[in-house]
Length: 108
Ligand code: SF4
Ligand code: SF4
Image (cartoon, rainbow, N blue to C red; front, side, top):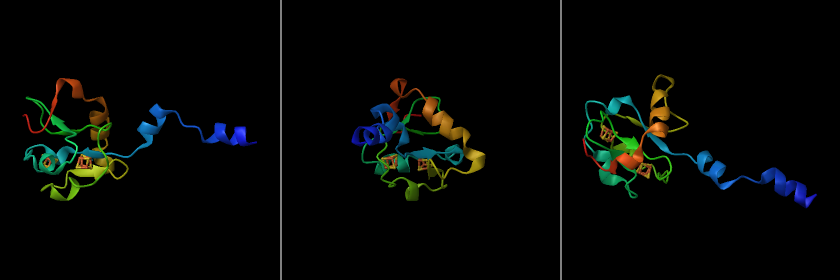
């Protein structure tokens, strides 16, 4: 019985990471990109590289502290489960972004 419960609640580390919430930068950032979020992020998990039109939050590094959300002047940042329907493309963009070829900070 105990063993059965252990099986039921077991979550592999990779799956557990994907279940954690993170914040998402949406399209309103485009055209502003002032880096205010970068300045307050305690773990430097907001990335960009030359040529990007907005910044990206690394979903694996974000600690869900919410510090970036209120400082954005254009309300572009949302918890991933509160992203407006019209902005869900940015959830996929953040997941697919190549963080290895980018750097934390405002590098546009
Ligand atoms: S929620 Fe916190 S850790 Fe995540 S990007 Fe914003 S400031 Fe950084
Ligand atoms: S604070 Fe908002 S507008 Fe400024 S770079 Fe971050 S997400 Fe973009």
